Length: 559
Image (cartoon, rainbow, N blue to C red; front, side):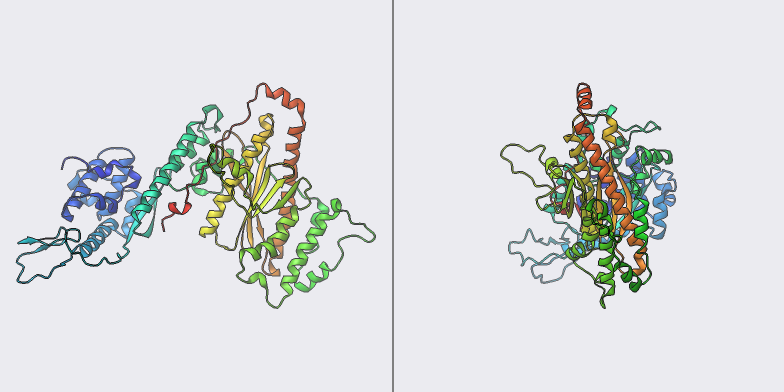
């Protein structure tokens, strides 16, 4: 045939050998493959992304591209895909053969007894025999009882494009055949995710973007990368995750330096006398630590004052809690505990109690859901539609007498950062941090850009006995920058007491940073003169909404 098969009219990142074989109605199998290769060869003679994809697929089907150049007339440069194929020279060839073998096994059925002799060969693909046609299941008047279809394992690959060097890295995984209805729903949700992302990007004015010294815009770079990903990422919510290597590799070293250091946030230092008191508990055995814990944290004759002594009391409380656990014959910290146990016996003492004395805030669980998340989800709500609840979160620090939320936290029992629960909690937490930041900005009266850029929100992701502290801010443009600030650890044994001391210092620094943000908010609200001056010329700061996760989320995960 002279034309390229219609299967290749779809986006090139969806092309694969199994998809073509399923859609192509040409028979027999050899002609299917011939059509597949000829179509790819025609595309390979052109330029652009389609040509590169065709070139890669040809490499995957044939042993060596160079050995076939006399057939195609196309000279193929050596690419990363050829290197990949050197270990498994013909992965797609084997996939196609397996596909045909499985199809043959499923399609050959002689439902009626045949007497006599069959002369000639049987075509196992279309059910034809020399001398007659064998009825298929659909054509039989009395079909046999339906059997439960056996799941077929097939290999597919997903591509992650790299905009820096224009190469692609493939990861292989096995999936079982997907139900047609589920596949249809999944594609619908993927399309909704991308369409929504594109519309929000188009709404951003060029003057509102973050321009790097190189002349590139951060928003444009993130858009070019995220629009090719059908599964949800933080970039779909215009969040720049500086901890994601794949995202940061989209930028040059000079651009990375600018991104990381523009309006950089730092934690205020802890007082030296507090640090000295914490170091008092640095002991290498449980008996010595118990002896130190039994000493009073107040000086002789000193009266307790919560504003002066709360930090000392909290530090003493943390070490007292851990020495009790370490003294037991069976160390409960070393067991595989439930999430509720980890929250109440470990992180409540380290996180909740550390922040309890911030008078302007209250800390607790968001049983009714986050207000910031609720506001974002209901922005387009119309009369007659039910209110969508905000995200539920394990830890939530709210400002008193206000709807503003300044810190959120998620807890999980797993300790594996590649675990599905951990990854799901992370994207949930970080999107909520942006919701919280946007709500604070929108609730404030018009003020200077510098005041807006000095604000931030905080997040803590706790997994088993470890944790990560994040900061979300808006250094420039419409981008929300995510920065990993510090690590936390609740040691299982006394040998890890050094990590416990560092975690205590981190929480004290975090508390100082939260108080600074509260002071900035109060200053903006109380400075009436500044509000009046900027009200005439400042229409406020607009921020792109967080992308709404398609529901159900599990539809986007290929099991």
